Length: 407
Image (spheres, rainbow, N blue to C red):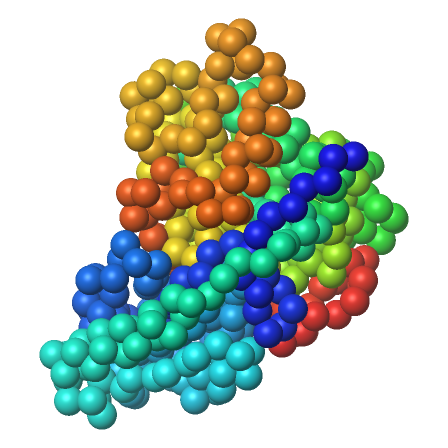
């Protein structure tokens, strides 16, 4: 097997990041404008905006913010609070500081309002950039890398070009010891027995079945599955057909276990991320758009994301780079500036699945070592975090995945 060495930024917890960004995080939607204005002059200098819009506390959202603010790609965090929201800002700042990262909080109600807080925030960002700019990359093994995958704007070509090609890349990564995460259970309905046959042991197989059945019950209550009008316009006919296409991005490796949002994979291998909340339906659809799922993949430590699209999607992400793999050749020709890989060549017999899979793998290594993706070049930094309920304990791996990693 070939020896591949990356270079990453070392963190005090022993992990390494492939980027060294600063986060500005608002703790309620009332603080979003101020936080966004703080970030604006620094968008092309590795300063990203994330936040939780809700005013009422939610253990899922609070745990997600802890994971994201201590992501290996993050070098420091500025929290922006209105001052009267339900988020425990002191606990979050303390959690970030304990990770060895610089962490500061601005409270708008105490800082003199909008303009004064923006001024103070921009001065603080300048100071933090000066502090983190000296960080240097060190050798990073492929076994230290975590990669997530997602599909969005899918059409009839997604499941026969981009998704299986990303699956080939996943197989190459798993073979070399990396951790790979695929989602989502709502788009795997009908594939549970196929996945269970790939499970590391019977307990993992039972957990895979249970996760998909939970998703099916959830969507039955809602009266709508994970199937958009654009999917039908793109030639997909049924949820089962879409599920088979989404499933193909998992590759053919053994499935080591199931994670929930914020769980860190205990070792290399392939994991399913269960994004469907536990219990009764309380907050509507489990993921309102692709970026909500990307946030959950990042909360599990994903250094970067593989994103397949047939219809064409332009989203990127805060924190972790997104590699766009375009399934349809016409979409690629129409949206070249947004796409990183033309998997539609498979459809036109200009490349094989294995060739495109290797191309994705090689590009992923270059991106992990610092090459900018198309979405990074275009300064896409989308981010979504909403409410969800999960039964405790949250942020631990299921028994089938081995050691605990609770917050």
